[in-house]
Structure formats: C-alpha cells, structure tokens
Amino acid sequence: MGHHGRYGLNPVRAGGVFGQAGLAGAAPRLLVVDDHALVRHGLALAIRVRFPAATVFEAGSLAEAVRRVQSVGNLSAVLFDLQLGDSNGLPGVQTMLRILDGVPLLVISGSPDASLITACIQAGARGFLPKGAEAEVLDHALPIVLGGGIYAPLPRPGAGPAQAAAPVAQTPPLVPGAMEGLTERQRDVLKLLLDGQSNKEIARSLGVLEGTVKVHLRSIMQRLGVRNRTQLALLAAKSGLTM
Image 1 (tube, one colour):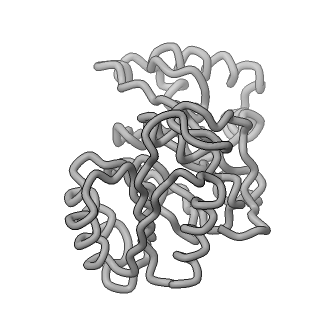
Image 2 (tube, helix red, strand yellow):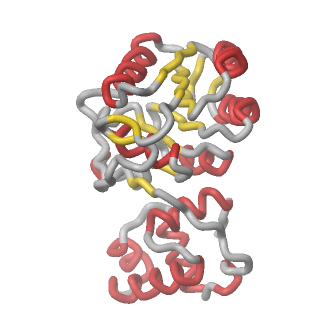
C-alpha cells in the first residue's frame, strides 16, 4: 500500500474483531498473495505493524497460495492480487474462492474500475483494496471483513480518485420481489446511481430537481431494505441487479 494513497475514506472505527492497538479476540491469520515481491512484503509488513498480534503468511502465485491454504489451515482471511502472473483476473479470484471454501477473500488491484469491483464482489469476494490506497485503509477494511461485512471502494466513473472508498459493515439481502415494485422513474434513478452519478448529475440527466432525486432514492432504499447509497450499490453488486 503506497504512502501517497489517493482514496478518501469515510471514518470507521477499527474495532470489532481487532483494532489498531491490538486484538479483541483470537489473533487473525492472514495470507497475502501477490507476485510482486516488494508489494507483497510491503503489504505484509504494513499488516504486521498495524496489527502486531496478526500472523501473516505470503505467497507469490496462485499455485503457491493454494499450497499455503492447504498447509497453513485455519486462515482468517486472504488478500489476493487480481493480476497474478499465473492467473490473471476474475478466474483466479473464483478459483481461490473455491479453495478457501468460505474464508473471506479481499481482492487487491491497481485498477479500481467500478465494473471490476462489482464483478469481484458478485463472485464472492468480501473486499476490494486499491493498491493506490494508504496503509490506513487496513484499519477499516480488515475489521469489517473479519467481522462478516464487505469493504469496497466505489469510485465514480470519470471522476478523480478522491471520490472513492466507502466501507460497509453489513449489506442486507435483497428483499424478494423488491425490484419489480420500483416505478419506471425509480429504475432510471437507480440505474444512474449504479453508474456512479451524484444526485445533481442524476437530476440533470433526468431533467428533474435534485430534491426529487433524493425523494426517489429514499423510496428505493426503503423498498430494497438498505440504509445508504453505498449499501445500495453493494447490494446491487452482490445480487447481480441489472436494469
């Protein structure tokens, strides 16, 4: 994780499973998988510095990661590079998820594209960490993921990097039949939201007042059982919502 990270974070207290000063429960056992040794060592070191009680293992390829999972056992989470030399992209993530069989996996990548983040979460990843983020992101992401939640940045397409990262502790399941109950205009608003547009941009696109957009969003969130825009976007990613 670079010292000049570019992703802003909503403040979230690093508590629950373990916090910045140490561990509240059993010490986590983490596996860092990246084929660039300096990146891998740097991330592992950042974890050890921020969470001294954690045990951190390393692997430089998908094959080595599989061997590590089988030999180490009882892992708490895996941080997995999306672009490994022996397994690029989503297929490698899917393979690792099958091997982990329920152990949380956080994808790390230098390309925080919105569609890529969505695909990884939809495949079953519990988090997505941009390589351009600051090391402090670990204080937020790891406790959330180890606590059973999802952590993912939600960059706006075409916007500057400062627009990003939103942690979510829990994302509720999609209410059955909820999408069918949305009006046509609510569907338009939701589509533009999932495309990364702000309320003002949605209002401009639809030719309505920004206040009208906010009313529609409140109705959509109530209908789908979520509390904020981030939960709504992650619910869409997890549930494969299409408009």
